[in-house]
Image (cartoon, rainbow, N blue to C red):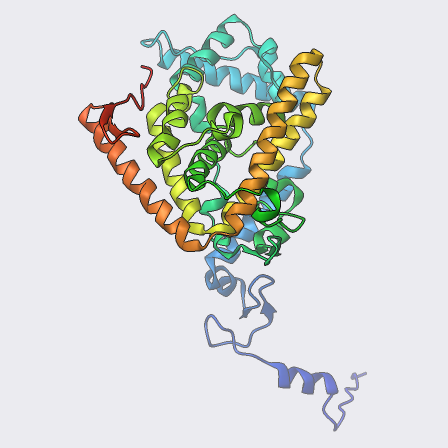
Length: 406
């Protein structure tokens, strides 16, 4: 018996909807598109068109699938043992290749490799004598420093140019990168400004501010940039160490020195930079780079300088809290606490003073620092490390500005 086919005279609504929504393939421009790319929403008709419509979409799709598969793989003991054998074979082949270089034996023990594969952290106590020797050689040669990602200072970010303070000195606009940054990314944030309004200078002291406070700023900013660069941005990991480094670099924060020129303001910080305690950071070359940081901060103007002073003050306060938790004698704790309190008061005074200064003052000061940097560079290349300064009576005198330790 023949099957009956019922044909409606009215077109189906689904066919009408399909007819109205048909779109030509955006790749070949010949067929109707049946699919949509989940990444860029491009319409395509076939697998071939999908593969050719965007390499970025297809490659990222494949990469994410592979990464998801790898994440789901849970290595068992057999797989770990196989990986250990592969690593041992790799290191044995590397040893055979480097037989001509006796100092380059960097093979790892089975125990160390297994700890690495299990995800455990490796400390110095886990290394054997040969591994310790290799590690120390890598540290001395600077090979390990190449593995550390350089920190990007906040004052070099574009968002640093958008810092704004209210008339009272509190921060008005929080940079977008700071609002959207996760908690773990605090190292890359712009430091916040003062939480409370800054007092006028006239209420802090009855005497007029020193005309040399701008040069004091050079000393303070150098110590701030030096410490953050020295710790590669990880300055919150060692509050007490950070505070002590800052105080060792700055004369203004410790002794309240009256520095009358930019040259005098830079003399002690550069000397400390080239001292045995910090010469490993790069010596004079590192110090010359810090002058660029000072220039960048000064060019940002008053709001950025207030934020940097505020950040420095918070770091000093964190160091002071750390001192209180350390097991120290009462005399030593009192002495360190006194130093920190003096530095905190000086920093607050400088914050209030900076807030009242016009931005033209900082552009002029940055130009002076640039001139001083060129002068130092010329003396360094020329082999002369004794610049000629003017004393109080107008007579020239020679003073050793930098003595770099070889």
